[in-house]
Image (cartoon, rainbow, N blue to C red):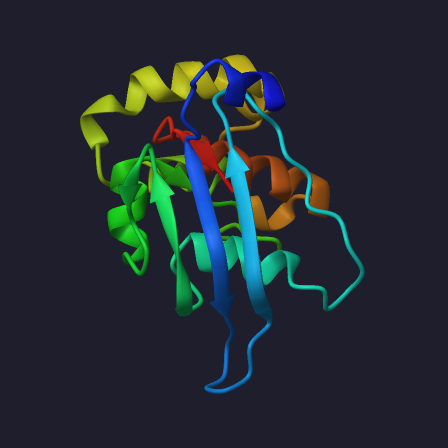
Length: 167
């Protein structure tokens, strides 16, 4: 998005030279950088084991960043815990094990807004506008959904907090 850079728009999320990994001394990311601008959609493409999921988990505080920095709207958020990142406007959709199978679709969505329960009705309306099929099936157990349907519930749950950036 070179145009945004030219007009002086700041990135919503920026990662500079990230070095991160799961085990001490074993780095999966080695100098990884990325910028995401308002309204921009970014796809991270690569073979298995390339570090795509590790990058997203590092941005969301699930993998320790050993070097480099992450900023959200210009504020350094490197090493912040996930609950703080959610409060600041970072959403995350897990790739697997992404719903609470024993809960209904609506209960799963409520879990996405546990930090701001007074906004429940407002956010449910917004989410059901985006995912109308979820509104029709809100009382269905999430455990009975297909993989793609579970992914829709996981994305909807992450959107409940109306994040600034969605990983």
